[in-house]
Image (cartoon, rainbow, N blue to C red; front, side, top):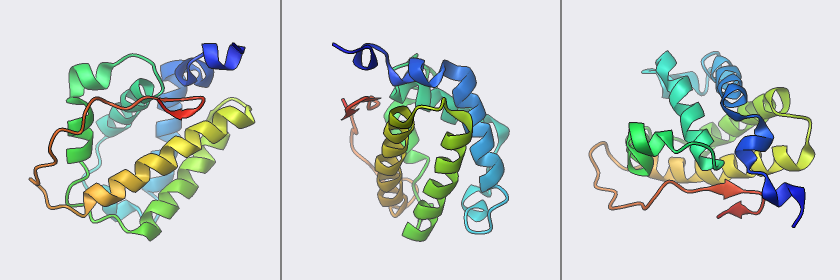
Length: 152
């Protein structure tokens, strides 16, 4: 087994400090972006921390999002009613990819795997966002995990 598969993406990224920087850099750009800023009209600074906590869990770090913030169901429900367009999703990906390039270690495979997660996740967020606030989403299962080979 190679060292790559023995290390989680969370550890390879650099842990919570890096994820907080990634979230901060990304949302700084989002809030200045004419296409995306309206989606985040109710944005608060705690959102940055919540995103970092979510990403930590996704990339096999501490499971705080599930333990403290409602898990997968809460994340999906937060997107209800946002009506995210494909144009907005694409712009989100452009800004996140730039943040990944700025904040993550200079490791092509690591960056590619992280961006692949965002591409997968933003498609789900776009689809869920078309549903009205209060929609019953059923039980989405546990918070997914993303590793060196994608969805685990």
